[in-house]
Length: 447
Image 1 (cartoon, rainbow, N blue to C red):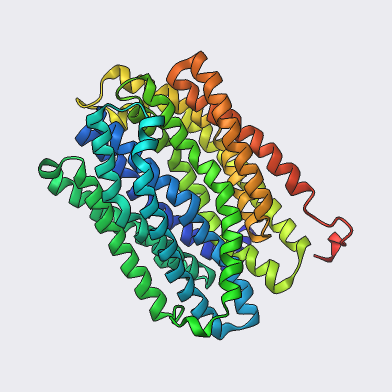
Image 2: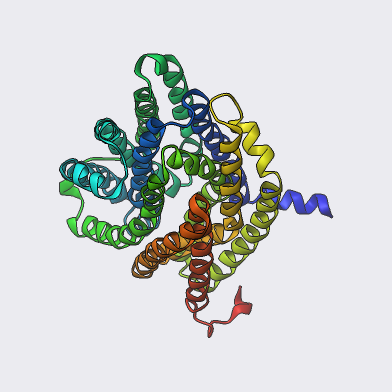
């Protein structure tokens, strides 16, 4: 009987796609998560690494607030477009690629003129560090354009249930990044890291584009695509990005505030955050990629709110128990984990203990974070962009307020405490909205 149950599960396409994507994406992201650990081993904790991690924080902010939104939000739009006109969907994807690149290039061009006054106002860097900050930002501009293109292509492939290439492509990017950093670290110093990330992302973009073109998912011709659909897409993206923008500012807010605590503070927080991010990558990112595609097809192909409700409830329960189990293990082993990953002559024993304490506070908030990310995927499919935007701004406001409060009490560790408290509050808000998002009059026995 148990064997038959396993056979049923493994013949289910959704289960197979989910497991394959989690394994492939987890392995690829796992390789990617090694990059900061090698940076720690090769560059240690210095004012230079503070500047780099602040600049790289801008990349992460940009990725979370725009690129990831593009990758996820394009899936329900493609599902809706396919249900109406399969032929025109490929032109829609091509137009989104071009429009996204033009938008981000324009934003980055304007940002170059605002960077120095903003840096002087919010970040506590000396003149030498500020000059390095400006140089590194200019160097990452091409990287951010490539990230946008990769995100659109990944979202398009995921929408057609072609999960393999988007899942494994980050592995190739990370391997190239590590090789380039290792080869050129003595010659170019911290600049070799930017070079490595750029060449790695260029490789990823190329193979994703090849996969999309081979599957005939992308065509270019603005005249074939009604501008109204592109406008509606980016209007929805703007709402969602506004909310995510506020949330994505949180890591930059943390880095700006801890920069006033002395040299090395940004690096210590970032090293703790990198370990904290591993379960997020392994559990949610691979899992949600499949589930967003699955939920989108339910929502637009069957038009069944009740079926979507039941499927999403099962997902939330699974995420809750897995995250409780994993966060407990990581919390209990955090000191051994930090010393194993970062231990070496570049980082002192005292600094390792600080990283461990920061990580512990982060891990307490892991379960609320994963629930929030799962519910965000459901709201994304339902196109609750205004709600997501409003909660995003609430998140950022609470984050600043609690940072000020807890940093006065606990210093650098207050940043992690603040993050955990805010995640708990936002989880409650999301769950209340989730409960009020369904029509209870529908006959639940129908499904």
